[in-house]
Amino acid sequence: CSPETTEGKEGFLHPIGISGTLEKATLGFIVRDFTDEGLKEKEALLESVAKEVMQGFPRSTYRLEIKQQYRNMKQVIDRHPEIIDYAIEAIRRTGLKPVRSSIRGGTDGSRLSFMGLPCPNIFAGEHAFHSRLEWVSVQDMEKAMQTIVHLAMIWEERA
Image (tube, rainbow, N blue to C red):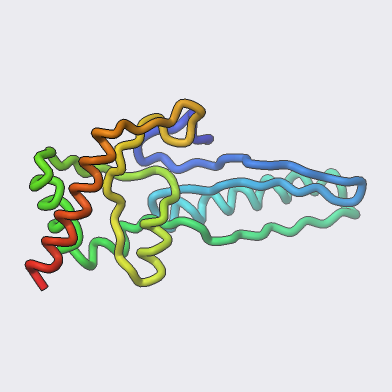
């Protein structure tokens, strides 16, 4: 499954590159899922496809290299519920209605969370993420900035 054919909390395999010479070929994929088990299943699928392809080339070899990239930050955030509570309050103070949702892609918040700084994603106002038509309005950027200011105030108030 690729990103454009999945939705919601479905994981995906996303081919991102292919290169080769006479002696070597390299395929690159992004593997995403909401659970560690789902990631392992997709990685095992890549391994089984590689083994199947290699059967037709018995004198060839392959190497599957998995570089851990983004995992579901919920594993970390759930251990620190005040972080979400504070973010929701900051959004309310900005005059907006908080909407909680899951994110299907990799984010800095995920990387930071697994590095020891629990960090949920808070909106920044963008639309049509990672497309040629990605955009953000000045009004949305201002609301995002106000949310961050309120968030800092809440952390100080409750320290």
